[in-house]
Image (cartoon, rainbow, N blue to C red; front, side, top):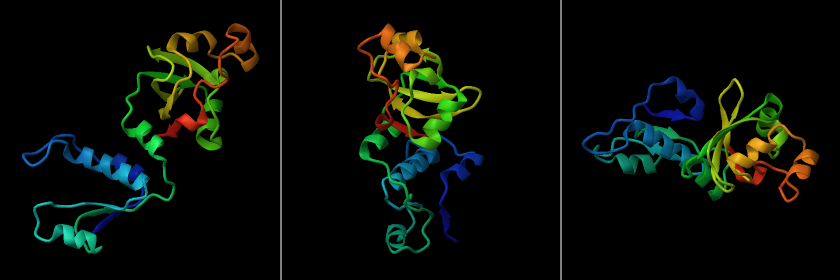
Length: 181
């Protein structure tokens, strides 16, 4: 029987291992992450038994050959795929509930006023994980401020930020350089 996965969130309930095998190094977790990356780029994917006779031919023909992952309807740009999966986070920016909602639902940029905590050391241009206070990770973005600068302006309105740092950009993380988890 062929299994089809349409929602990667449903896989969070399963215990998918990281260990490798004599035939591979990444374990099932790395295969599922690769499938998530491919489907986010609009590519349907199959994870199957690579040593079974005819498995690749059956998968290509759409016949039962393993677990099928459907292409995701909302495609990410190559930049956002790189940011989400390949660019390591150098720190964490914690935001309040209003900023979290605006990022998740409104597709807006993150302003310093919504930042409640900054963890780690990073420079402007580094990737940072963005999480909601008291909750989990929301996404990842490219910081427009260093960790020290962001600590100075977090919680401040744009006008106050400009008074403190006249050449500063308004966004702590611009929406074009942010991807949801």
